[in-house]
Length: 143
Image (cartoon, rainbow, N blue to C red; front, side, top):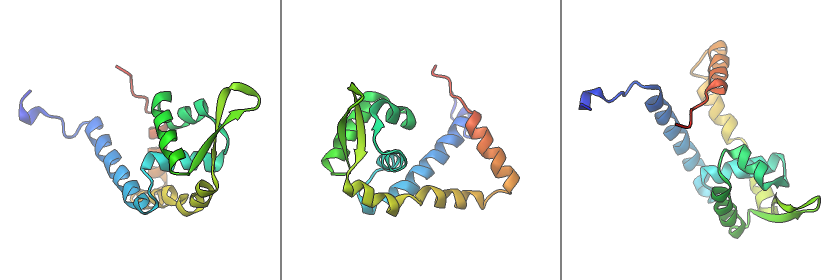
């Protein structure tokens, strides 16, 4: 492939650029709380639905079980959450916020809505709704 053939205007390249900018926004805003962006999303999911089943949390975050295990291990050591057995299914594990996790939730929960407002300001209301609809319809093939 020639240097000039690299598709800088491709959908994937543009989505990657947006992703990196969003990631940077969260990194910059979460640094003072000692959280990474993915840890933020764990806390926000549990803030809304405390006591989630491990597999439901993995699905909500679109990550694999082994990846979530390491993430939960680190967050548990940091005191943000804890695992408990599911009283209805001994094979399942439920994940709960600790008091520390519950305290940090209100301090960080507006980050997503603040970013949404900044993004929304760049579009008309109609274009923003169309943008959200298109994002909802995107399905990336595995291969």
